Image 1 (cartoon, rainbow, N blue to C red):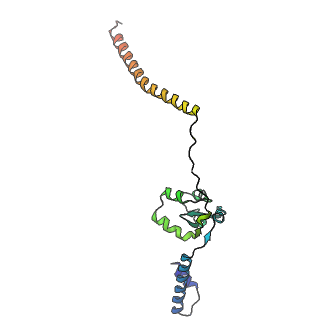
Image 2 (tube, rainbow, N blue to C red):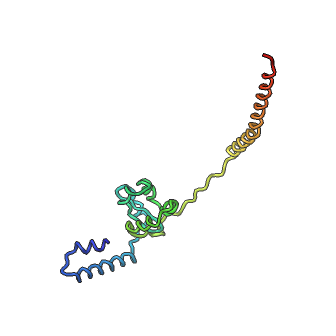
Length: 172
């Protein structure tokens, strides 16, 4: 479709020349796809604003600036995916096949994998003894309440029934 628009706006003397231009355009697109530009992580990380937003997904770099306003998750979803490898964020959302196809129009190159920062594994700190003791004591209280509360309800029900019968038998 874009190819036809390009051909329509180029001055040509005859149909043959238009076909030749189409063929040349297709060849240049194929050359670009086989030799994409490679960016360092620092280069991509500089593009982290609303007017200039690039993200990295699956080793590819995308300039999503024109898509910020149209993104279903809002521009903040894309802006929060800058300055990092957003592959996990992208895959966690579960994008449709059409969304993945749409990304290709924003493709600008690839990222040099050796420049990506090492992934930091966040593991929770082991609980301290005081924190662990607190959890144990609160667990004990919960278990006691689970045992005593039904007994209390049964006791109140029995007392109401007993006093209810007694009041009916008493002379008025």
